[in-house]
Image (cartoon, rainbow, N blue to C red; front, side, top):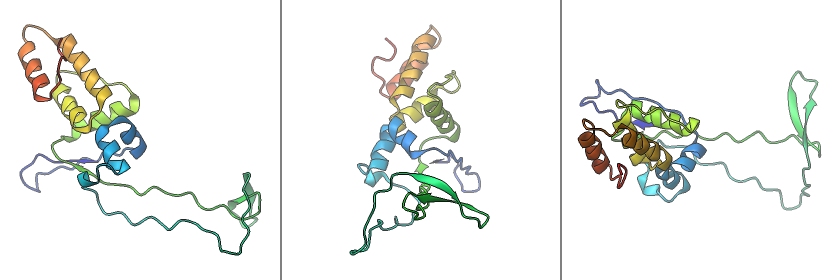
Length: 179
């Protein structure tokens, strides 16, 4: 994930890489769920990835057998391999193709905090990180993270904080978050 740099020129631009698993992102955020399941194909700003390999098929006259188990076998050639119960070498595991996304409007630190919160299922919200976390959670559709931010906002509500918190709730359409 690459948050969009806020700098005016390319020389000032700082790209922050935030590695994350697609499964976690899709399970935790509406944005990634739509993007990665195909419903949000129009949202893609993704680096080109090679096409997937064709599916494995058997020859028309070959007999296929059900593989019941795989066990390590010493090849006596110095390496260890995996052979199936039929004695045929098992295919190599499929490697997922990494995806690089650019997320305009998010700063790198907020995205890092948001992704860390998705992994750890907890977040330390502070007055300094609140607006960035709310922006990231709102952009990504991370409901649990938004709930944590609104809980912090309710607890921080006071005479000197009520107006800034109300404006933040209004800006990100958090209805009833300060009740």
